Length: 298
Image (cartoon, rainbow, N blue to C red; front, side, top):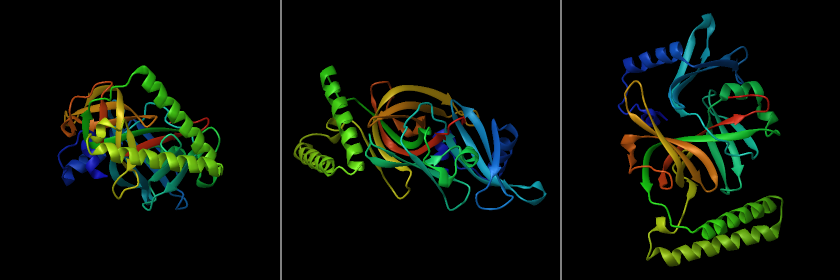
């Protein structure tokens, strides 16, 4: 995910010397250094370094210590630490083929799809959670995202009554999803029928209306990577930070999308429009997150 380095302010490609200097800074100035036993190799320690850039944005580097205490550094990856609790649903973890990174998997009924995200606290997972122990009671998920292409769009006009209707429908759908997951065939049939009616209604209206005037928000997978999503959601709040190395301005947006809250970081160069609370953000995001384990903190 090298291209998402621009989301935290590194817009220009790095040469070999820049990368080596950045690796050295991450190791020397890291605000977070932790290690845990690897799942793959006996007597191998997986170590994680995080360099804070400001406002929750930063760079992480995960690697292993080899013989004679030599550190074999992995890739430099950008991150945005989550600010709010997103989900209390069951969560699972899968190890990726590089053996140094993990994907979190969570079924959130508000969206109606499986959320897959890059796990930002792998060392804590190795210490407190294990593949065979998840899901376990008391875990929660906090999500964030980085984007390199986004647009600010105007909100849909809704009266307080219309907003209440939308919230009641969302709650009713969530309950039906729970019933369907428990094997209720009638609930499954209702969900399918309502989805078909909604699709048919959109087809009738889309010929004369822009899709953004019909759909308030959406959250759907896109592309080949499993943790990349195309979203449209309401901006709840926004602030800016500067990358101390490049002085690029980064927008950090609190987003509510299809009933879930999370933060999105995007470079000012890649955001079209001026973000303000009440407006909407439309763009492609790389989903990240932390799992909060019982009795542990990220």
